[in-house]
Length: 376
Image (cartoon, rainbow, N blue to C red; front, side, top):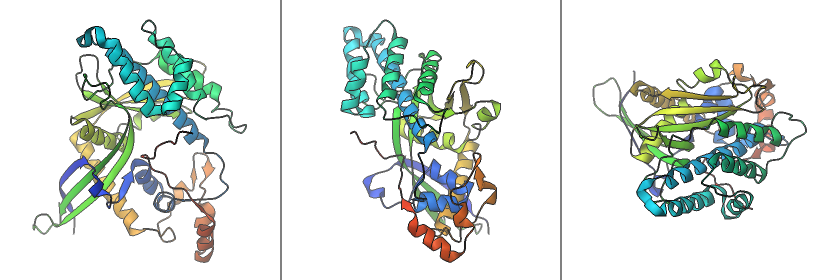
């Protein structure tokens, strides 16, 4: 008997929704990469002890703080240039800069970044570059002798090149132009409830309901051009190499689709477009050829329908193997990913008794896109 989705609704989560299961794009993708990997890593939050630094994750986190800084500079510039504020435009811009800067970096670090930079109405690009360097230098990131690519020097060079090609004419979305402390489209954590109602092929109407929370963090929300033709998503990615295959991967990417849904709920508008911004670390010798890519993508109704089908299928897989990585399917084509063996390879290639012992020796490390970075 085939099930059919009848209606789907989305809304912001409330405290009363705390009991609902929570999923983010990373968790959903992990299950489809390999159910055993997904259940172990993102449902049970287990990882092998003694693992080294996760350099791609650390580097990406630090660079996303740079991307947030660039959007903060863009916000300052657009408010200062807003003639509707008259002689108070600079005051409005400064209030917004300080309020959202503290939200993004914390009081102490925001002050440290400010000490290393000076707000100037003459050359925003130079100010933005100086701040980007300060953001990286205060991020806590440090070089690893075993990784010659993701060095602080390479990251700074990539950040400066990114700013050189940044589009200042796409304003950061603001909920209210007259409220500098209101919601803006920079590093927006979201928590929405997805409610799916469906039926069996029995013609009896709605016979089942599935509800879950979908969480994540949106890098940026912008207006397209100063004329504000439509709202669009800004999604930043760092990579070792960018090419046509990289760009084409986002034409149907689940993350972009899900984030468009979340941005629509958050802005109370319709978000169907996104710019996927790729940046390589380190830069190639000529970054005009593959070092920086802005890939525009669009979402139609069928993309959103496909996302719901995919999310429902994946969540039911998690539920079927809840806390049971022993019996979860092993997708052996994923035993070697990113040119290295999966960390669970030894676990999967063991008998049940050995697997139980392995789990007892693993460490618990829970992660959520809603977790805040603690200021020290």
